[in-house]
Image (cartoon, rainbow, N blue to C red; front, side):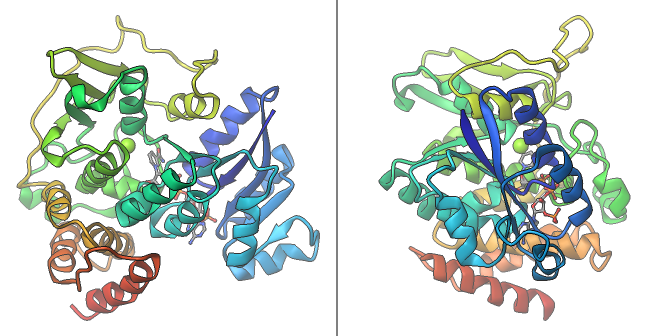
Length: 378
Ligand code: NDP
Ligand code: MG
């Protein structure tokens, strides 16, 4: 039996993880969870899964619950660190959204445990730091972002990444795949949240619409697979059936396919290296229609180029881009800026932030204040 700590349990990834745990009760146990302030969703989780430990980031939400059970409810950085380091926690799922995930990924990377990583922002913001710590402490990171999980599966069993010619990250193209630059200026929050293939949290849905999600995934792939940026390509594949591919030097290409359902990469990562049975929908080749491919449009979706630029710069560039994007997505969701302002402002921050070559966690955290202030004064 493996004990799972699920960070970000009240979110979309959290829901899929809980479903996979329910289907694998004989081998997986939910020992603890975390969330920010969604107490009503938490009550549903409590009823069904009854986790022993519950870390709540938001202090008011913590206060509203903690008097009921002092042992179960935790709050504050020290308690979070203690929870992650508990001897009886075997697997840590990092599924918090946004930059907030950096703190947990940083602590988890030092544990020597197995981490399932959904929070790509933590790798984009602090990839060098987290992967060095994971290596030094023998922590196993398995990505559950569908593209990176696909690449992880394609590389599984291969002797050396030296044989890899390139990796191809597939992109659905999001809800505005065919929109003109003029149309993009006037899209509403509702339009942008309406992803054609995946049901996800708000932040990542907007990232998919701007294609910043692909940009973040390029940076994520760079760190996770130690892949030179010139070997990483993006192909728009609107059906989201091929989740990503690896091309080897001899011309052989491996791809991982399946219906777009996050439970598949999640179960594989939780029960790695097994592919255990499941009861969810399967891909039917006779019903899924044509699989099509097109080149990404860097002009309509400048976020992809920003990610490659961040990889040219390295140092704090990924951190700055990611921080800027967290804030601009929030401003767009509050209808304070236009959709096309998101990459425009992100670029200003990427180019103008006080760049540091080898940032510490403190440098990365301090940059947050600078970025916030700069954006609010633009
Ligand atoms: P959601 O917005 O649905 O859920 C986010 C979770 O994080 C919630 O539990 C939320 O708590 C918690 N949270 C938010 N802010 C904080 C904070 N400051 N401190 C602690 N916890 C916090 O996001 P998703 O599940 O869609 O995405 C989670 C991560 O996984 C993201 O990094 C995303 O990029 C990545 N990902 C998601 C995919 C998907 O299909 N959804 C696919 C691939 C990657 P509360 O509910 O209380 O606010
Ligand atoms: Mg993805």
